[in-house]
Image (tube, rainbow, N blue to C red; front, side, top):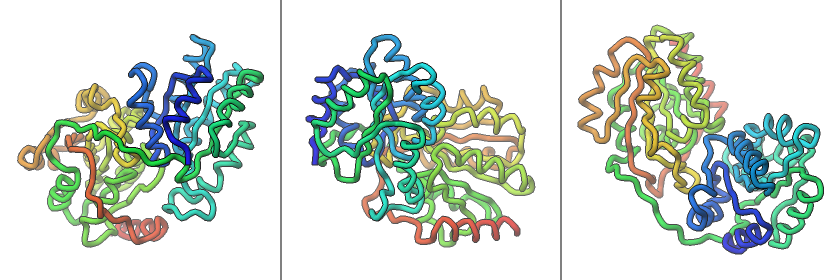
Length: 365
């Protein structure tokens, strides 16, 4: 096991002191150390991984120093475009050190949404011509730095589960008292039997699953972070006689925020967007998003949403619900919630394919 502090110091010794990316559960101890020991302007928690690699390219252009880009391996998909059309040696030839958490490593138990990505993590890097090593020793940092200095190409460290020692992390709280699960429990009581729910990646889908007696009414988007609202849009366009709810998170919303304008442009009367905003990437270590510094309702309104609401407790939620639910249009409700979840929170028992089958059968009704 490696100490996050030792790895961080080795990076700084090689003049790599600018970090950006999207936090990952396998990297949470490293991400926590970076967050605690870097000036704010030297650690940018990006909207998505492609965004992070572009920031890293800008840093190199301005300083001549490669940046460190951290991500879960699911983020490899988001970096393909800037990796091949921006930093590649046949385009601008810009180095960056990629640190990739290897979820779904073959022969290591993981959740269904990580299995295929785990199998493809190494082949994707090989296909894209990215030199890489599985991180095992601090000495590899100097080798990576030398490679980037000589070639000006990106280099990747693939990080297995348990590579970094666990460390005590300071809990960063937000000012909200309502738990996300309590809000989900209340909303589940308020929706109608014919209503359709598409829930986003992470704790929101797990909490929805635990608080429903039957699960055929919900599409649990266990992977493809940031795309639940677009899935819900596709359903809402085809099922205009039924209410379609998207249960979203602030991190997921930010990851592909352009979807808001596309959703609003359709001017659907049956689309209901609920954003549970705890200002954090809660499922992967609680690192902050920029949601504390923006107004989600104002953004949605500017994109063309018909009505927008923001609440912080159950009384406020109940007071706006009927208008939010019944008013024709594409409506958005922001629910500001505290960070964290209960320790014994379960996971869906059905496979994603089984969830799809029973959900599609429900949509036929």
